[in-house]
Every structure is written in C-alpha cells, then in structure tokens.
Length: 187
Image (cartoon, rainbow, N blue to C red; front, side, top):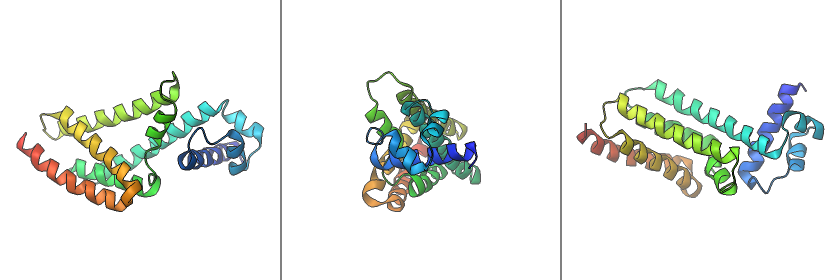
C-alpha cells in the first residue's frame, strides 16, 4: 500500500472511531489496529493524536463544503433550500450521530489548542457563507438570516440523532419554508 493510501486509511479509521466513540476514548493504538498500519506509519504521517484529530476535522470540513456547494450550484434560485438539502445529504451519509465539530469542541473546550480553533473557524465560515447568500439574494437582515439558518442546521443535526436524518431534513425544510415567508416580507 502506498504512503498516500496508508494516510487515507488512517484518516478514514480515525474519523470513524472518533465519531462513533469520542476523541478521548480512542487511543492511537486503536487507530493503528483499525487502519491496519504499523505504528511508525501512523507517526510518519501524524506526529501526535492532536495533529491526527486536526487533520480529521479539516477533512470533514472539506467534505461538508463539497456537499453544500454541489447542492447550491444545482439550483441557485433557492440557495437556502439547497443548503438544507445539502446538509440533509451530509446528515444521511456522515452525520447520523450528531456534529463531529461540536463533539470536538466539547472534548477540547477551555484548552488553548488548534482543534477548538478549527471548530470555531468552521462554524464562523458557515455563518459568513449564509450571510453572503442572504446578501446575494437581496435580503436586508443578513446577520439575522444567517443566525436563523445556523440554528436550523444545528437543530436538524441534533434531531437527526433522535428522528433520523431524513425526517430531520423534512422538518428543516418545513421550518425553512416558514422562515422564507418571513424573510420575503423584509426584502
């Protein structure tokens, strides 16, 4: 197996293990076993567990953005609906058990580290993206709309754990339709 394939295997195993069991609950030995790589292979790619977690989060963020962008590009006439659909697809494929970013923030809170910064940047970038969509679509209260969309997305992520991702997406779309009526009155 080539070095890049080994690195991908490590990241895939680490993402699954961290997501399903928690960051602190999973040791490097478990990642090594699950990825079926040698100890030196893991440490050649990642100097520490924190660095591995950082890379997992960056990879998840990249995947998340590709879901959103692919949906919004499909139909730019209703970008907020497409954001919810892209988020719903993400939940269905990657987020059945909640938000990995918020889990990382919980486990690494109040510690000066890069992990918490990655989480904060991801959430801030999403907020700014939603603000930009509101502005591009002629809405005046862009901050308010971005905040409401963040609550809608975060809420659907939480609900996916309880009612399942498909039902959470359906409920988020219903809520968005109500919000859109309110927002259109503010244009």
